[in-house]
Length: 469
Image (tube, rainbow, N blue to C red; front, side, top):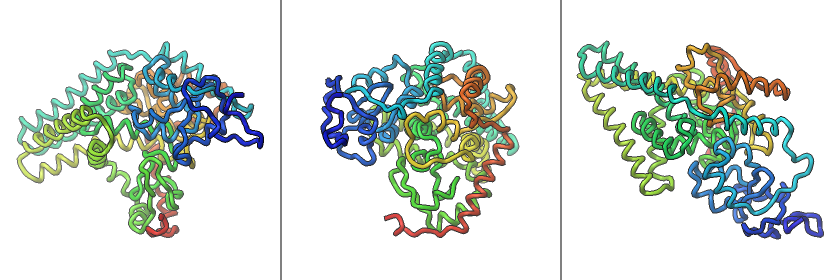
């Protein structure tokens, strides 16, 4: 063993390890890598395991295009499956990671990846060569639908004078938002062209200019969600205190590793959460307003290049300009407000769809564990059963299990991928935590989850600020 081996006392001091990238003979134990996590070892190098090798990602964390948080949360861990989910074998990110190699990893038998995970890695490698190619005819059809919805909305507002037509325009615009955000979702996963620059440009067009939801903000939060799905501390998609809580665990002191602050359960949170099963759908109806705010805060405060910041704000400015101009053409203040709320409520359908696949699923404590990528994704997600002719409505979100296992897979291939690959794989490996229900039942399960937590909140103390110091 190299410098990463145990000393005479039997311990494994990380300070004895040669951290030079050129030191390819160095061997690390899994325990030594675990000691280098970002949360507890502030001054140590940030090591990760990928495959059979160890990499020092310290200098890359602040430069990572997908945001700092994912690398911070995975430092000191095995990043193999999370990294492969987002990056191709021959991509630029993979080459960057390989340039940071500092040695090999030595595992105990108990630390080896289980056979079903090895099978999955081979499955993904095969799928990447055969299944990841996009059929652009699928997107041409979507483009026609989106242009039609937006054109109808504009026509009904500009050329019609009656209130009914104007409200019908609001519905058409809301459907345009709901449908177009699926494209933004695809582009954020680099699942349209599989070229990061082109997909980012699509994200700016669809996310920023058409929806007012920044692709930069979306990527930074959604990447973390995928890599730590339904983690109490890590996943921002279930961290909605003080408005919503999917588990009573949020009634205790929980520190968000995404927001870098305590999620307080105080008297105000208790009031909101106690009625959350009634307020959930009204909140989803105006959830886009919160996304506007989160986007603007992100673009104003997060480190990014001057060029990127200018593009973000310019494209967002375009959205607010055209939408406010459209609303201004309505004749009365009452119609303007009605148009605003109705269009946002229809567009808010997608927020309900996002929550359906996660809110009622298992929540786990802490950061993701080594070699449990499959178990984490199956426990934290579920599919929504629907006939093929309704796939357009769900936009790929109905196949959340498959999407979380292979985020870069084009959405129009998810149905066949589920039936021909994932289901047989799960059956062969005895993976029984594969969950799917119909759209109505999914809503019922989410409502019951929120109602259960609401009932428990009434019996829980409302902690004061001092509890979190």
